[in-house]
Image (cartoon, rainbow, N blue to C red):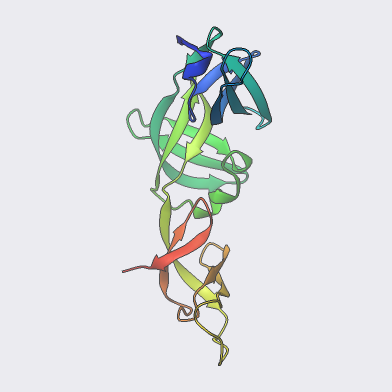
Length: 188
């Protein structure tokens, strides 16, 4: 672990603060007219998700934590657990569906994900930014609607609802953003 000064904290850095693990979400260097400059940092707790705004002066030091990033392959769903396999050691890792959140619906057999580990304990997971899925249901186009403003609801093969342009119909394959859960484009 490396000690860094409070003014060196940047978004994405993971630090140890008040006995917990925090990720810097936003940083802003403030230079008041009176007194020394400081770094205003918005922190998010990696364990329970609480947020905190903290001021760090350049004289203060904090521990920067290095997270281990490992690639895992999604195997299957078992009750409330999602089972992944380490691509190097072939060891299996079980994560609760709540840990992955609503994006768990986008997991597909063999999908590669990156798990962030701290002292061999998973604290975060990244899915691919985009996945290709088939539309199972789509409302018909209403005559007279303009294409510019009218997106219609559709249901994907995994049961997730998204808004799609009127020219998309059931049975078509589309690319979906897994972070925003939105339509990106038609799949080739």
